[in-house]
Image (tube, rainbow, N blue to C red):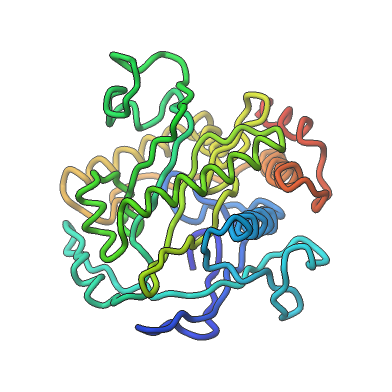
Length: 339
């Protein structure tokens, strides 16, 4: 189980064959790598499953290989259009996810790939950015010239990119870290790093085009991939308000809303998380949460309802279908602005 969805195995993957299983989406949410937070957001799971299925079917129609098989209704695997209600469960092909040992300081990727063979989940997240907003970690980690931008320093305003920036980060480490191309190439194993970057750009193009058609701005996102018998396929879930950042009329339409709300209302906890991560990095400790001195607090019911309407109204708008009983997106976003 992840922090927001459960993982079911029907037929386990082997060294030579993909397995069969499913994601069961919950109403849980996670921010700042914390894992499961104290509250649930009503219908969040169904909205993410719906958007994920919609995007996988969109990718498949454009020739992008994925691990998606359909959504599950009454025990049957069906296309999204044949579902009678917003789905909670997504059927997928399974690959192997070997153990990634660590000694408290370093992760043993050689062990991971020795066990993985030619059928494995690539232990990377491939991040794509169409915009560099204020506060982006990219500004503190890199210079504009690193990306071919004609600025001596980062401007005080968000930067729209003509060509998306693609980066690689770890997936299974306690705290995500960005990687240079050589380290990402080593962690990818048999998967070609250039092919991963090109696949991310294609997924970004497809999602951006869909967002544009719905009146949304697609700012950034990520993909995860599996490697099977020489082919790279898009895995996990793509193009949802948890994996990607969208905005509508200048206001965030993504999990970023919850991140920023916690920064405003629970700054002590956010600071404790940042401090714990920094201490863990400095000391070479994998489990940063063990160093955190505070726990997150529950949210008010009104905040959870606003988040629910954002997810559901956003899913309706992005897919172009009235799948959820939700206010118009303009009303839902108005409530977000008032948080």
